[in-house]
Length: 138
Image 1 (cartoon, rainbow, N blue to C red):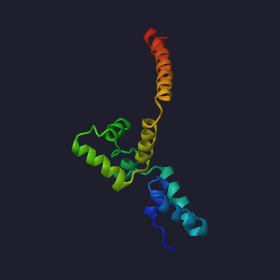
Image 2: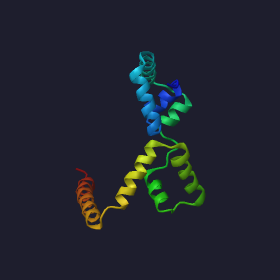
Image 3: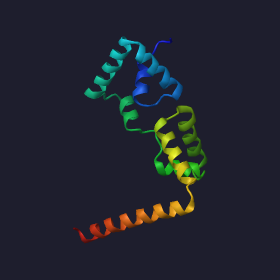
Image 4: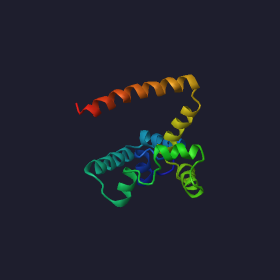
């Protein structure tokens, strides 16, 4: 079996690996006590707080587009340069977080009109009640 690196374990913890890579890491973890110890050590390092620029960048998802931008990407409503960036982020970088958001938005896009209308009505009703309370200051 191929050697699993610290970088792969970091990717595993960040849920940034492909399905095949994740399966490979999980299989190796089941078979190797030293690898399990290495994973526990990495988790402890994270718990203590890793404050490198790279760690903060990944943790805060500074390069990830917003959900609204992902929706605009789906509609191809972004300017060409940003459309290309989001495409690069999704396909080349393979950001699992953004891919999940995109899949959710695609599922909503395919939602039947009556179901979407009912969901919007529920959101409006819950928001309208909240806004009434906020408007009265209570």
